[in-house]
Length: 383
Image (cartoon, rainbow, N blue to C red; front, side, top):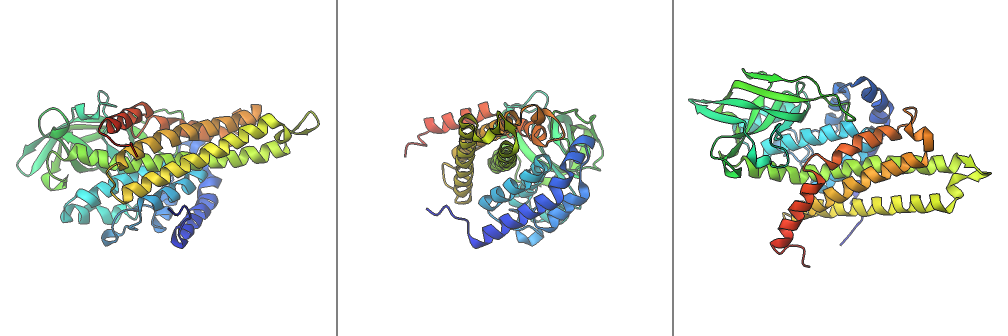
């Protein structure tokens, strides 16, 4: 059991940290304020291999591990949490195509996704199917060499901007076994997009409904076999949960560092507030919980890489813990800044707004508890 990063992982971490500090951090306030989707900066990230982190090398991916990805996303999120989270979603969609798509589908979509010449979205949630994802209603009916798709998806990151939508549709009976996965290009006839959502955070990435009205998509765009869609979606979410947990840690680490600096400089009652024991205890708890969250994320990532039987349970555990801790640390940092933390002159309030949604997406933290409890009933977690 070695908790140290390898030489290669240290180099990856340093590269991602430098990019986050040099490119993301100086622009994050503007992207948030003006709701800018930073296309050119995302493509710069792709040049470093961050658009296909665990996609195979055949079509331009970096072929790294889930643990490597967790390291990358922690660093990127310290610069701009919202933009790092979009990169996570893009990676999840690309990985599904790479892992489950035919050679033809992979060759069709991946080369432009791994360079971010094209952007990808993951489409599972519907207005009436959130936590109960297996109840989705978007329907795909076979018509010759095409599927004709009707329905809609909600809260889609990249909606209206992305070029490829990896979408879960119903091709069979009710329930999880009737769900299939298909890659739908933005220019498919019959696809349209709702208005951009007005959000608390995550403002550097667009979010909109994706609507299908007799949308025609070639059958060859099927990812996996008919009926495999729900399994594919859940496997994708294992990694997505780790990534979003890592994003929470990166944001929280930036806030903790800012809080240490601020409380070291800010004087009240004749001395820096960081010299008061109550503040010291708060900072100590923030650091301790943040380290515990990082260890949980990295352990779960190692289990996912090793394809261990309890990987899904540990991914759910780690996502729940890391996103709860991440938000709390950001919020505690705001409190330590006092009234200044509430101002947009300081980045803390942006990290608070951006990390709040992490407790909701990729499966709410309540659903993470459901996943863990079910796995426990199956006998996992007894060691």
